[in-house]
Length: 399
Image (tube, rainbow, N blue to C red; front, side, top):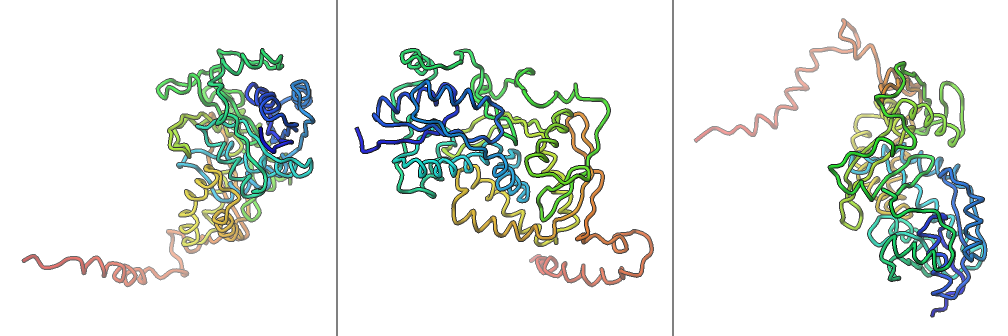
């Protein structure tokens, strides 16, 4: 059918990619090497490998990407205060570029001709994977089965799996799709496609319902260095261990649930429900530390970049010149964002209790309402008159 002889498939072991694995073998008459990137999805990866080999894969390569994912992607987003459409902390979006980068590495190691993924033609992930492929390995072909085959949906996929004795465990009654990593869990589709319907209480796999969370709050101290988290409660931790520990504390107190309707890259509005417990705490604590360490005008300029930075992540442009430019600017803004923040977790809320930094620009002797010698209040009169000058000039005599 083509010159493609070996394909590396981004594989999860679920219904879609299991069917895709067999379909690629049958349609392209090619060898398929499955690739699984571990970003903390908490699945039995040995079982995933077994499924791949039982379905006909030439090999199944597993790579541990957790450290790279948190250090280079999640913490970069935290430093940027990245929120898509002011709400979404980009948990799924941030995992895709690290997964795609490693898939390219695997493809080159095994001498593959093509890369394949299981993303649908309606979603954002097809862009995230394929833009990364084209940026990092333009010489490799791309196979997107959902845009090629005539399998219309879950019923057809299950019938195909039965035809080829593909070992999958799924149900036609599955009410939504789930994506999990160390940073978050997302829920989409199925019953959630009705934006008026509240999520089922038993849907959430990670966080305690806020009303059922402990009646006693927990206080934590987070330490940052140049905008990156480095310690929790006085203990220096690596990126993965720090995020895990913070996830546990925040999830217990019901922190990090979000329900929103967002704009997909392809122009469709989509409802997503997310759990991002530790990430929510990191975002708010980082903001608090910036309030005493960032120059006012630097903060203003950096804040202008946030919507664009988040949009680039969401739309799949992590490996782009504009992302490189924005990341460099954001990293410069974080040079003095070092210090500690105290927070209280309680029934779904995060309250900032204090912030301190050796780089602090806050001066109590200037901020005080008591008498002081550091600030001459009479200077404010001239300052106000100068700022009012252009406002006065707008007032023209009425004819």
